[in-house]
Image 1 (cartoon, rainbow, N blue to C red):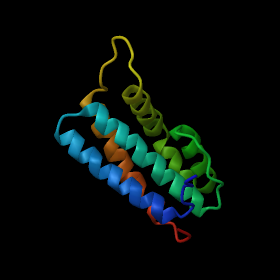
Image 2 (cartoon, helix red, strand yellow):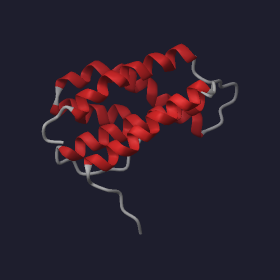
Image 3 (tube, helix red, strand yellow):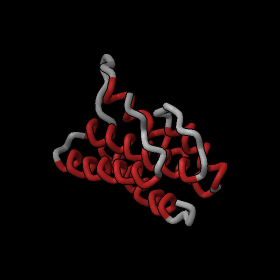
Image 4 (cartoon, rainbow, N blue to C red):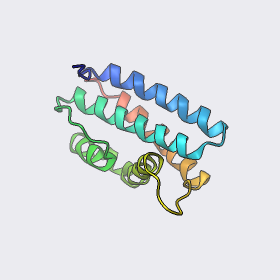
Length: 129
């Protein structure tokens, strides 16, 4: 059985790849795909950050849970709570078919991407990483 790495750097590397996918999919006007990969990137960045703080890796995709854990370490993460709640929905919308559902508005996605671009340096600046 394969096990996930417990090294922050490994999670950050995967997250950066997902962020590149976000840009590619957004350029191709694939809003759902870009939103899904944004959620994946944020999840990996937060897990990498938390692992660097001694957090025990758990299987969750819920960005609100992960961000709440990060806020225990650094209250500045609170600024990104609303964005993470919005981004969490991109994950659900891409994975499951819903009657009458549509992709989130492009502007909403672009706003969330910008917020995460601001959050990532907070994650990476930590001297313990």
